[in-house]
Length: 195
Ligand code: FE
Image (cartoon, rainbow, N blue to C red):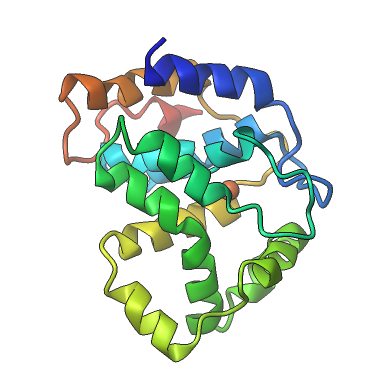
C-alpha cells in the first residue's frame, strides 16, 4: 500500500467523524477537508497548496489523543506522515497551520471574532496569540504565507451541506507528487468551480 492508498484509507475509516471532537463543528472531517481544498482551488492555489488544504487535518486520524483539554498536536502527526511522500510545499503549510492561527489572532483584529467556538477553545491549548517576537519568527519561516492562506480556508470550510467534489476527484492530484508531475501552477482542472 503506497502513501496515497494509506491517505485514502484514513479518510475512509475516520472521515465521517465530526470535525474537532466533542466541541464539534457541524460538518464531518471529510466534508471539512474537501471544503478546504475546494476553497484553495477557488483561490487558484497551486497544486501543492490544494493538496495541503485537503490533507491539513489528517493528523486527527492518526493516534487521536481523545482528550479535548490538551493540545492534540495533530499538525505534527500529519507532517510526519506526509514528509516521506510530499515536498515541503505540501508538508510545511500543514505543519504550520496551527501556528498560523496563533499568528492571525495576534495580527488581525477581526480574525478572532470569526473563529468557531472549537477553534477558540483549541487556541488556548495551542499557546494563545503569538507574541511580537513569535510573529517575527513565524513570518521568516518558509511557507508561512501559504500556511496563513490555508488557515483562512480552513476557518471557512465548516459550512453544513456545501457541495464539493469527492475525495476521488483529488486523489490524482495527490498522485502527481509521486510521479513528479506536480506543477507549480494554478489548478487548470477546476471541476470544483462548478459545484
Ligand atoms: Fe481544519
